[in-house]
Length: 190
Image (cartoon, rainbow, N blue to C red):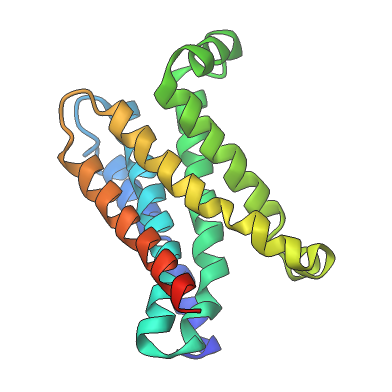
């Protein structure tokens, strides 16, 4: 994988935007369009967390450092989709009425943990540039290990949100746990 693939990968990572745009244009959002949009971007956020966490295991399994070139892009797309998910929730569901929203953040655990994950993702996005890597030095890695907590928070957010159907959240949680166990295994070997 070379640098000339980056524009192609970038366009490919916009796939969730293409999907939801198609559904909006052709009126295929279903009976609850607001929930469909919010859930679409929430689920894609989890998928992008998984993709980002997959980079290091892929590098180890394939003995190729080419994967690392895409990790920042995947991480920033994770933040992008998490932000759209949150803005859709705040804007479409609450219509930017912050008083009931703030009450829900403190009363509903799935909203609290989802908001916490987004705040942590914001920190990672703000510290992802080359300049911040140089400025933070070895502390940069410590900060970016928060992605493991964010992944767990994201899985819990989905589980607690799903009141009756646990299959999808469970699958995502298992995948995240497997990817996190790779980290433990690789650290022990190192």
